[in-house]
Length: 134
Image 1 (cartoon, rainbow, N blue to C red):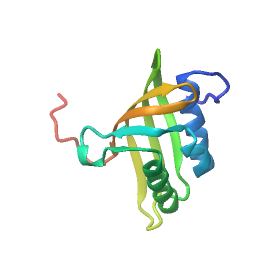
Image 2 (image 1 turned 90 degrees about the horizontal axis):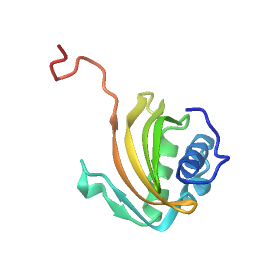
Image 3 (image 1 turned 60 degrees about the vertical axis):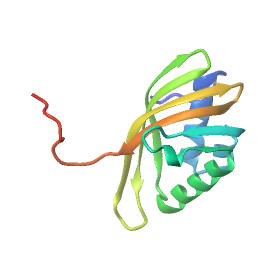
């Protein structure tokens, strides 16, 4: 999805976040999140948090570790104040290993900020899948 954040609404907020991530602009990234933002990771519940300061801390660490970080919105669907998005994050860690994440994030938006999300994103692993495909 190669759109730019020109429209208003939930998708525009996500596109603004994507543009800030790709520009490695930490302040612009944090500005996409409400002060009382709630981040949920249902598959790792202990990683859930409240507030945009943990957003700053997390992205600060990621940007320091993956200096060529690129974030892409592969697909997105808007339902009122919610954006369901399949995303991909790529780059190279400072130790030379590939950084490749993919998954779905469900973003709830109020006005021009994200107020809540549910993150289902994991590393992309090579090799054969552990499930039967035929």
